[in-house]
Image (cartoon, rainbow, N blue to C red; front, top):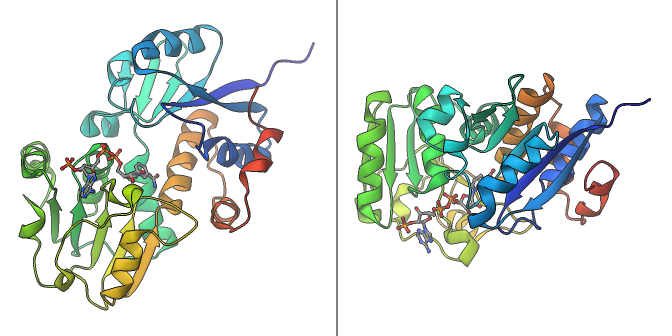
Length: 288
Ligand code: NDP
């Protein structure tokens, strides 16, 4: 009798636009893993019950996206150090004792994209991080591990940026403030971790923060240039990028945790960036 393929899913609310089934479908095909990966939309009030049911029913792993990353944290008996530091979980894996391990691969995914795909040097660099929500929290630890000369985190609501400073300052050179505290000397890297691009808006920071040597990175991803990327180009940025690389690399880190093999992300990144609608290819390995 042949064994059923191992089952994985991504949960969020809503989740139907997620690229994760496509990405993990490509990873599974490339690495010849017998697995399925589907969308699992769960309303916040049903989260604990449905996650528990998924794993009780034999599920092996789950990705977690907006708005559940903090809510699944207490469901995990075990957590990786990077999930503990982030205070949020984006990957769940069932353990041999049937308990859940929670990991956070967002920061590692961003850092791999910056160092490997974009070939940036982060050590001794000046980095500006816009936003103080879940995404900013997830990447602060891994960015500080790269020993930048400065990591300046600014947010519309200054108190949230200051709270992050309180939590993370022991890990490296961190400054916090509001958008009006952004320095007029160009940074080496500006990362937009706000949700402004989703509303077609740009955080109100001075254009003097951008120079020819500045890379501007928008965590939001879209086939067209985001509002932040358009703004960065108008300011004369050396390079502007949207967050496809972070999305694919954080998925590869999750896949490694689950399957013990890190897929080659290059063809997957090319596929998600492609202007043609790639999502239709997903079902070959995805939804049940
Ligand atoms: P949260 O809701 O946790 O945080 C939202 C943040 O955006 C807050 O800092 C908020 O500021 C700020 N914000 C919202 N609207 C505006 C605006 N109009 N102008 C300025 N600031 C604004 O969201 P997340 O942190 O989870 O996600 C942030 C972004 O990162 C999203 O675009 C998301 O798609 C992207 N992301 C991408 C990933 C990838 O793999 N590429 C992974 C994770 C996230 P305030 O506190 O003042 O309200």
